[in-house]
Image (cartoon, rainbow, N blue to C red; front, side):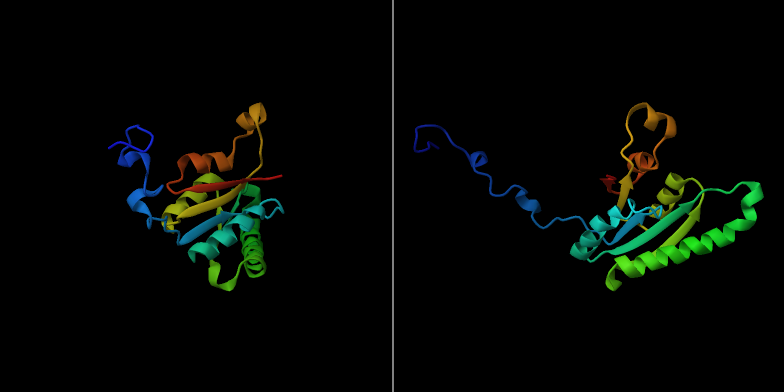
Length: 163
């Protein structure tokens, strides 16, 4: 077929839509997980998770991971766990609309491993977390929970850099 300027045109020159036939195929997000370390900076993840939860009518799960205590500190673990559950509950009440609230979890162990196990157990669709923004040698020596989660998660991860 010849165009008005004497050049050849085809149906590929004028796509019907960017998505083609997939116009109604949006991701289904039912469960969002937000790992928190109780710092003010980690709450930044909630600033992104709440509007996403509202947009998709998703439930938001909060999680905090306690470090494995030394043998001499084992007796303090139940009190630490109770305090963390209480703080997650308060944050949920203060920062999440009631229809978005889901179960909160306090886990013990290596943070990345515990969070990834929880993702699988609860069929999480999206993880929203903050990163500390470390770079270079310091990050390589210390390691990064956020990086480990991003590399291994079986669902999308939204990383919010801490400023």
